[in-house]
Amino acid sequence: MILSDKQMHVSRTALAKLESALGALRSQSDSPEWVRKMEIDALESQIEDIRADMIRYENLRAGRVDFPDSCSLEELPTRLIEIRIASHLTQTDLAGKLGLKPQQIQRYEASHYSGANLARLTNVAKALLHDKEMPVKLGDLERRNEINPSPK
Image (tube, rainbow, N blue to C red; front, side):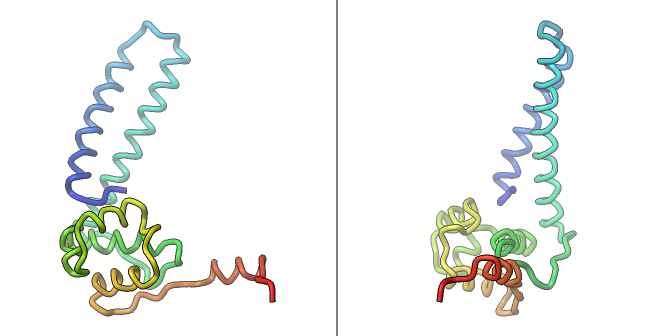
């Protein structure tokens, strides 16, 4: 997932290099055909992944993404990042709203908020949603508890 304009620029550069390497590989004939095919498939897969990430980021920045009314707990970190991007807020802007250093937001987003506690996630959501509520579905958590109930 591309998180910033800087990462978008890096992705464009990487994409150009991969496309160049793919062109060179296709014109190469000194490797066995099966090796070339595997290398070509690998490069094409990387190119496809980068293009998909770039399109997603561009769509978020352009406001061409519809968000559902709610999300699961597992989706929450990604949704917060997407809302930040769609709101045209930089990581620095969000950090300022929360009274944090930009590097902290960069770390949170790079790890999909894995080091953030619930209070921090709530503050991020409030900063992004301007105190509007974003319902979170606990269905997955409830199902897990039915399968593995906690001891009484």
